[in-house]
Length: 346
Image 1: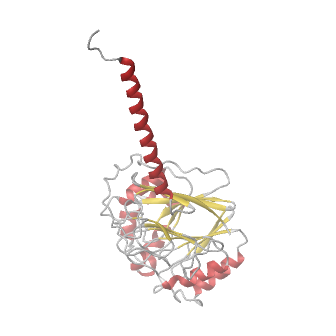
Image 2: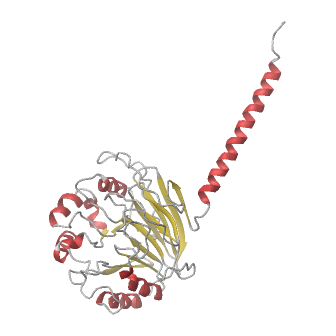
Image 3: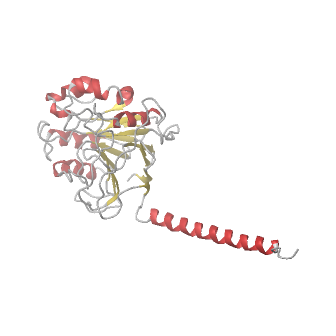
């Protein structure tokens, strides 16, 4: 027919265009993937981590899910027989915000032992604040919780709210430290509020003497430690040198993992020695997980050996404790950030 277009030529041209567009999309995807993976040895962070040298301010949270609803990113952490899970965070319950309810919803679908890394009930750790702020959210996991105290808990004398709520089995007001075993792992829980702890946190303090003796009596391969104030941090509070004797004792004993809170953000460090030198062979890997529910804060600097930093979402971190190592997974209350990886024990 006069003026008709040759349909074969049109089809061939369309195929060429589609092929070119698909090739461009693949190349863009490869570039984005490589950019995400660079600079994250031992783990993978996705979403919006502040992994560049420039500290990043906290981004506003999206609205939390309604109480009792399924959390948006709470894919259950696998817990094979014989491989226990510990999961938790620090800086948790405030009566004035929804963050602790959102993180408690995450815990609903993650099995294992729940830990806290201090500052359980704001603002002052009173019995009323534990009852009114902590109990309605994280309180439903109380039976499987191993707590640690923080500076806000210490604002009530003798940790009366903390011990009144959690009860016995976690030390006492004069010696609020303890340890426990999970299969092939030994876990120590310390009190880093050195100005309030009897004898402080010095090398010859009762707490550090107890720590060295406890570690010497431990005959398992893998060791983790939980307390509130981080030795190293890019957050607002920064490094806490008072807890250096904890690191000295743990490093000498060949411990593997340190979990802290205090700075209201998430940060993962490379394995390092007590003086902050990178040490892949014998170093401790520190995680700051102050994301349990209190208001998030921006970073103030970039600490050496910091691999991943994020203050964009509340969340919890789950560790699967293998016989010779561990896997970690940070689970956020929204889909904006995730971090995961694995490491071997010394």
